[in-house]
Length: 171
Image (cartoon, rainbow, N blue to C red; front, side, top):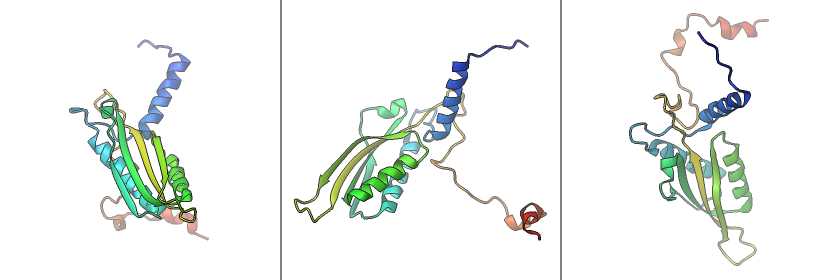
């Protein structure tokens, strides 16, 4: 066996790639190169985020159209929000950037719904892009979902011992 010395900068690059792999949207289909699954999950997440922010009268989340950006792994999503106050936009952007994803806002337009200073209602158009990385190894990523999800397998009541869970609660 021959040992090969790997330069430090190559190791740093590999570490970054491994980190990006965990932050990537689900990988494109290896056969077709389509990022439809990633696009659908990303749209649904943005929809949920916008609903959680509240203060919305209208919400439209649609696939963005930035040419063939999906070919390069970019998943453009256009979001139109109506009825927001500035603090709602701020809260949305804070939560958006808090998510551990490879994504960004590429454009943001805010327009007042009225000329009345007493009406804080805004019409917001936001275009966001997420990155869906593919890997030539045939095992693109362990992720099938945008974020980790919990679930039960089998019957949780059939555990042989509760000792690991209860040992910390004894007096």
